[in-house]
Length: 353
Ligand SMILES: Nc1ncnc2c1ncn2[C@@H]1O[C@H](COP(=O)(O)OP(=O)(O)OP(=O)(O)O)[C@@H](O)[C@H]1O
Ligand SMILES: [Mg+2]
Image 1 (cartoon, rainbow, N blue to C red):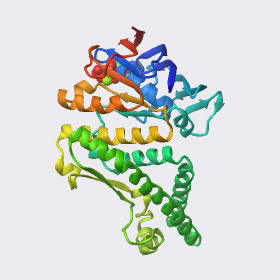
Image 2 (cartoon, rainbow, N blue to C red):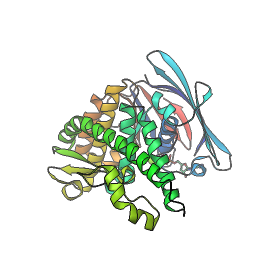
Image 3 (cartoon, rainbow, N blue to C red):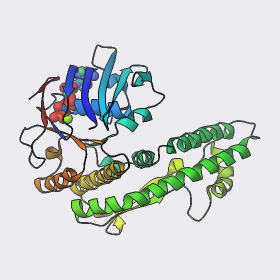
Image 4 (cartoon, rainbow, N blue to C red):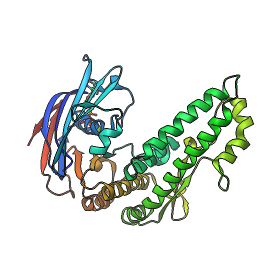
């Protein structure tokens, strides 16, 4: 069972809440603007150390207060762990079992939430940043040491940029070497992850859309060359503009449906299902590597999908061994079955039914 309990204070319209959760299916019911998405956002924050709605903490902290607090109790294999997040205007403080944690990744090892919300289609529609984040989150759960490579690469990238912009370029060869080495490692792990994701994603594509969905890793530099060669070829241009043009920080995922670029092949509604399918494939893989941990947060699915597509989504979700949190305007949300716990939200106060 992932999340057993949550204590929440001053999080958006929710002044205070103490909640116990069902290990399988939690339904959150309430009118518009009652605080349903805010509750999901708090759960997401507890596992990821950030929101899926905003990067600005001042938007999340309750008006006229200084900070918010979310404390959760997670149970994995009988072991209880307390996770705590305090967000103030300046910073986020993270605690795991009472000790200050160095990064949000420590939360995610215990409680890795995934969300499907009305903005899910942005994963396909927007630029590559979201897709890279999706990709790196996936790699991290298959291979936690990936964090080290990721950090090493980004440190080298910052250093190389600083040297490109300075008059003394003597350390450039050294940074090129470090960037090439860590960048190749990063790209290799991303490629390997997408290969792992191929099978669960193909299954999702069939079940959700009846279509063949395929992914291709675009590494961020030309195929057929090493990253070291690409850096050497591009160095004059990099020096002129003071940035590193090529590399894993420019990577993307190419998404093809029935052999065509996804954007050319699917409707807006199908785009939502396809994006949900990507997340659900990642959930399936994540659960295979760290069983019994994933919380899946689904925000108002009935408003986003027509009944037929909702039914397809529900059929897939019900097969996944996750702890489910679903929001709905109405209590009789079809398909998901009988909730183990129902929460009624009204103007920021939450009552367990
Ligand atoms: N920092 C904040 N402090 C206090 N209230 C806030 C803050 N941020 C947002 N709110 C309010 O919280 C309320 C609940 O928002 P939320 O998005 O959780 O509602 P919801 O139940 O998901 O609604 P909908 O069904 O329309 O999606 C809104 O009225 C919003 O104005
Ligand atoms: Mg909402």
